Length: 84
View 1 (tube, rainbow, N blue to C red):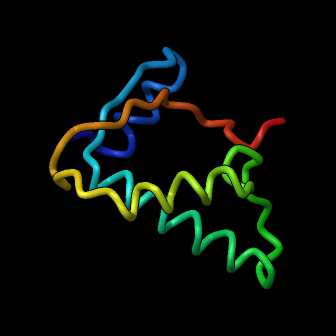
View 2: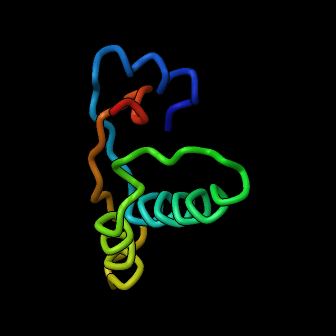
């Protein structure tokens, strides 16, 4: 388990991190809520998450029967995901 400051240090090195299915689902719910709230907050959603393709992906994650504690996701730490 890494702290927020430890994860931030990994961004310059473009290090991969791995997460569980549960974390992946929480990520999807977070971005759906963020997308919904953006109508009122004016927050811009990163292009990679502001698409029907990402919503379809999240729906697939919600419907999977895979164990929630299984490590299934690999991501690269980045601090400028909103950059086009």
